[in-house]
Length: 173
Length: 344
Image 1 (cartoon, chains in turn blue, orange):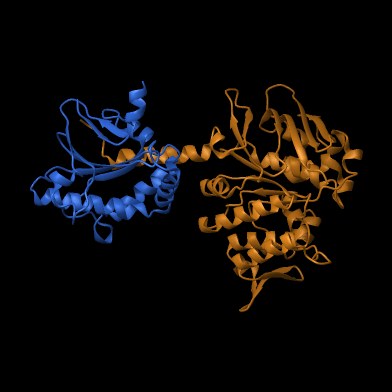
Image 2: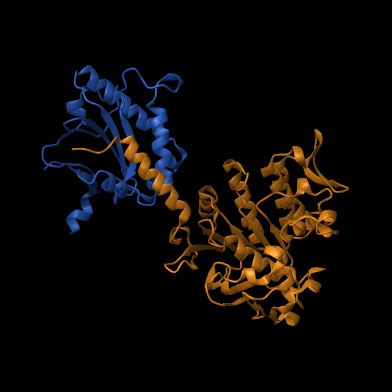
């Protein structure tokens, strides 16, 4: 069983599913010119690009958490998330690995976000990537199969086979 | 003037036994369709209305009938529908303990046969109020009052009342700072002032006079609030009832509407509003300041299909929250679609 963790957030992959840290300066090697999502998870029929954002990290300063939430609610974060996805996709494509449909999963460690907020960001990200081609028609060769912005509760409900949790809380138990 | 502190409704329309205390500030009523949000507003409004002007002579029972406008004017139709006979009671309490109560049964026809108690002392102290219905009425004002007086239209009396209040002349004397501030903010939002010529309302600005029938419906609502503040209907100690402020309003304007409501509350106006709108709820949550008093009332049907209420003084405590639940359902389905059926 593989656990992918970054600071206080983690996801636990089921047996048979592999995942790797992608946003790693040494192994990535092009951090100076390309952004990167945190992890890449390989399933039989699909690939997940996974990005963590953790404003409620116990080590985060309240001022920084508030600034992040403001950035999130205002939509300023969308462009950040979009660039990470596109650069990661280009990297994987150029390496000859982007062969399966790729889904983009964003995990936000913020319990106070409502489903309405998460729905709004999911839709905005879809428009920004963009998931659809010009004139509202599908791309001839789609580069993103789907995307979702979730908090811990929504993630674990939707992706019950690879639940998300807080590292700190687990150590307390 | 003393605001409304409490209501008790026994077997009244969809309520079996509602027993609810109110905030002296803003009371936000939410709930699915058919949970009696507007009914609650109307009972409270009828109780306020009979303390002022010509409604004093009508009395509580007749005012109740006129704002609800039941079939054939029969009071008994306001009783909760049951297979047996039911006794209905509505009791409204004000600060200081004054109570106004109406009792009747499902067999009662005439308002005269309703047992009203506490009315004499209740109406001694005026409680000015305004009720803004979902449908905007100012554009339809010409001829409406005359037609309504002849009982040629079967409109609920709240429509007549709001037009009458809009026609009240500008309050004499200097305008105090808080009110002037609000009026200026509203003038900015509607880009002008409201003037009445005969029975016609116009928005007056640099481009001239624009009749209300040509004005966006959302703007007309803000214009109505401007009128009610300008003519002194909404002063400290008065009560504002607003049924779905969001109706016909662009979500981008919602913040300004919420700011106006909060500002009225800070001036000492008690507010009761109903809403189905997430943006409006969230604006209250985000714009609320430390001393603002907001109570959320969630109406829902229990196992016996009777409507009950849960109150909370914080947005996150609203439960059940029919509005947020709708978004959760949309979000769930969006995730399922976006992730194309989760498989291993």
